[in-house]
Length: 357
Image (tube, one colour):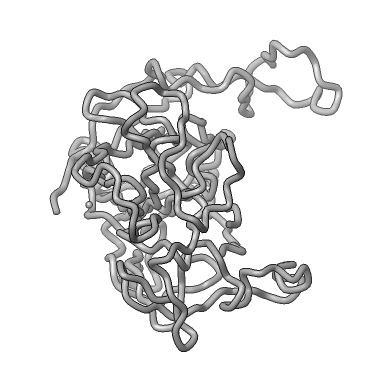
């Protein structure tokens, strides 16, 4: 493996300071026009640049709002990987920016149970997520996938993505993603002053997470204890992680006429974007994932609702794990250029290239 909702739920609370459980990393800094504050001491490389820690949100006129995904409910070994139903943004945020533009200056994410407790990533592994905030200037539509930036893409596959209503639409939607989703939990993603992800007349949040259920139901503690794994698991004995999260091709999988076929999802064309250099080094390194005959694990073997266990494995069939993903977005109001005064923010666009398998 490489790196890099049917009901609607409104967003949660808003605020102007960081709440417990969502603390900004101690050494995260931003450009500001006040005196430099850095508890690690001076840095001659940046001595001429004023800095301050990102903890004083009120002074930056920064607020936040929360959005929660619908519930995810899975059995052991199950993959959840699909675009969820849209989540309406909080009504007050929609009203505030119905004729304006919101500037997203940072965000955080976590996965929580019904009591608001964080779900450890050794129970529900977030391989990655793709998320969008969409404004009135765009609609969600089924479009052709692209191997360079859509996980699990194959010829003829359609994916649900935001599409601007016209070529003249500006700031109609924006994209958020983490390929190391689990490792990014509770990590603040923030931008320097004057930079933001901009969305005009924002209305909805759309989320496509890839989750793998690795929770050993016989283990009540938060310490990791591996559950049953298929024969194709490549996790070594005593590994501190579940081999299931690597999407092994179990005995539910067969290879037929250039396709990967499964008891769970039928047949899908084998179509990996193994590019010659400089696109990637997969081919030049002789990586086994580039050939169907030697492909033994990866995203091609774990589409939505597939079970990453062998046919004779069915532990805890009636014990589901249920939780939701939570995103907190920090924002300011965008002020466009006027009277020779520059705009308050420059728009940030996420650049993305994958060599996923």
